[in-house]
Image (cartoon, rainbow, N blue to C red; front, side, top):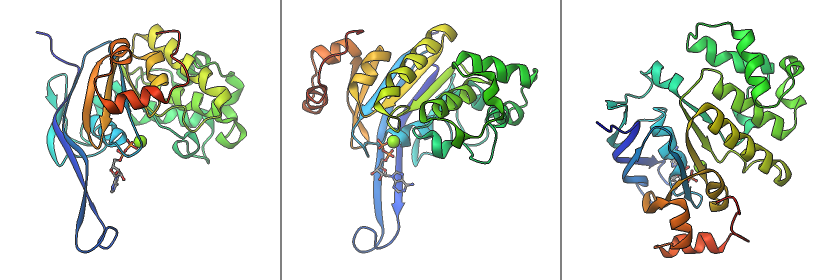
Length: 261
Ligand SMILES: Nc1ncnc2c1ncn2[C@@H]1O[C@H](COP(=O)(O)OP(=O)(O)O)[C@@H](O)[C@H]1O
Ligand SMILES: [Mg+2]
C-alpha cells in the first residue's frame, strides 16, 4: 500500500470576520476552499502563491494548529484532531517566517531549543542534543547563553531551525523562512535548509511567495490562488510549461531561472 504521509482531503477553512470590518453584517473569508493535497515521505514540495492565497492557513491545518471548517487532514492515514496528537508534534516541525516574533525574547538560545525536547518528553540528554543541533545549523555552542536580540536575523533563523530539528522530526515545514531576512543571508539559510533536508532525509514542505526559492529546493510545486490550487506538478515542468496564466506571471517576476534546477 502506498499510503501518503500527510494528506489534505477537501480541506476548507473559512474565517468569520468581525462585524463591520467588511461592510454590514457578518462577513466571511474563504481562506482555503476544498483543497486536496497528498504528500509522500521524502517529497520536497513547494507551495507558492501571492500574499493572502491561503498558504499559512494550509500549513496551520497540516500541523493541527487550527481546525478545518470542513474536510480533514490525515497523517499516516489517521485523521488529525487539532491539539491532541503529541506524536504528530514530534514528527512534523515548523520554521516560521520571522524569527523575531517566533523566538521568545526572554529565553536564552539553549532554553529555546530545549523547550520542544521538554514539552514532547523526549528521552535523551537534552544538553547534548542542543549542542548537536547548534553544530548542525552552523552556530557556535557559545551561543547557548545568548538571547535572541543579541543575534543577527540569519542567526536567529538558524536557532529556529535548530529548535525545529531538535526532536528529530521526519517532516519540516518552512513558512516563508527567508522573507523576513536580509537579501544577503537568504541564500545561506536556503542552502542550510537544502543541506539539512538531504542529510537528514527530511520530507520538506516549503512555503514561499517566490517561485525561485521553491525551484531551488523542491521537486514538486503547488501553485495557490485565492484558497485553491491552480496548478501543480514537477517543479521543472511547471517552470518550463506553466499551464496557468497566474503561474506564468509568477515566473515572469523572476529575474532569471535558478541554475540548480
Ligand atoms: N485569523 C484570521 N482571521 C481572519 N482572516 C484571516 C485569518 N488568517 C488569515 N485570514 C485571511 O485568510 C486569507 C489567507 O491568509 P493566509 O493563509 O495567511 O495567506 P498567505 O499565507 O498565503 O499569505 C487572507 O485573506 C487572510 O486575510
Ligand atoms: Mg503566510
